[in-house]
Structure formats: structure tokens, C-alpha cells
Length: 275
Image (cartoon, rainbow, N blue to C red; front, side, top):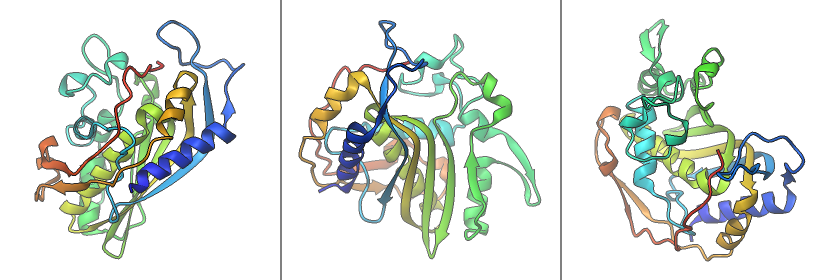
């Protein structure tokens, strides 16, 4: 059975049983009816996924991997901050009338910096290091630029990646300041697992571990019964990920990734989202 499901179940149980409620606090997020969106949370959740063992996508309910990859490529490959270049509508609430989300996410990755080896943006510097200096302990990508925070429509949630090559395996730590567990957890896990797979393939490396560090792992009050029902389901076997044989990071497209034998439980429809 899928280990990603059991990691998710254990995390949710821990939050529900041992988490701290925000009731009584002045929280920012609100529901569409104007009510405050309270949460129950745990601080400093760390989950580890062995990407050689399986692709970590939930089978308790479906994760839309195609849409998750589309967002990943929008940020890391297109380095865009405009939702008009994104196929899903997930960023609509944070975009202005021109489609911009401000100086966030892809905007930060596109900024060029000078290095002794030349001028690179953060993604190209990452690709350069993985090919030319893979055992460096300094391979980090960071989108949390304090000088631009006041011009971001939403501060980055998944804000940095630390990469480390051990032997021939590419490992990565995804740092996330905050996460809506029901809506976004497996979405982020799946898409950043895809990123590690792409980077390993174009750098002639093998995939290793993805370590997901969440500072504020929370379940919204109106999501609690949905999560309780979800974690009672029986997991299915993890699917197999098939990736096209390409060697250039910028050549990959959504259709280059296929899940074989992906069986999942029914989708939870009409999940309310706090903004």
C-alpha cells in the first residue's frame, strides 16, 4: 500500500489529537461568508518520502497531478508570476486585474545574480551546480525575498529548496512556512517530487529522498469532518511514474509525466477554501 497515504494519515491524526486551536486568536484568513477561518495546527512537521521506493501521491483521494505539474512548471520553468500563463484557476484570488500575483514565486526565480562562474537566475544556477559541482553543500533556491515582500500578493508558502547529492542520489528539502493540509499537502508533495525527478534526470543522477518541512501545518475548522472521513479510508497501491526521456530541464511539458495504475478513492468535492 502507498506509504504516502500512511504518512498523511499519521500527520492528520497527530494534528487533530495533539494540535493547538486558533480559537480566540485574531486570524487573517476568512471564509467566503466572512466568518473567521480558524485552524488546529502543529508546529514543525517533518515528513520524509523515499522517491526510489514509490511516487508519493495520495490514493485516499485523487490528486490532480497534471494541474500540479502545470503550476510547478509555471513557477520553475516559465518563472512566471502571471496567471494568464497558468492553466488552472488556483491563483485567481491573489491576482490583480492584469493577472499578476506581484513579485512572487516565478518572479523571484527569474532574477539574475552575478557569480564567479557568470550571471544566472536561481534555476539556472541550480542546474549548473548539479552538473558541475553536485556535491556542493550550498545548492539552495529561495523565493522569500524580504525586499520584495510588500510587492507580493501572497507571501510564498513553499519558499525554499535545499538540494544535496549523496552518492548518486539527489535529495531535497522543501521548506514551507504554512500549509492547508487538506487542500494543499499532497499537491505540494507530488509536484516537488516531480521536480526532484526532473532535476535528477537532467543531471544524470538518481532520485533520493524528498524531505518536507512544514512550519505551520494546519487543518481548517470546516475541513475537520472531511479529514476525519478521509483518513478512515483504505489506501491503495502506489502507482508507477513514467517520465519522458528528455535531457533539458526546459523541454519538459505536462504530458511528459504519466502515472501507471493510479487507483484512488472518491474525490472530496466542494472543499471550502479560506482566503
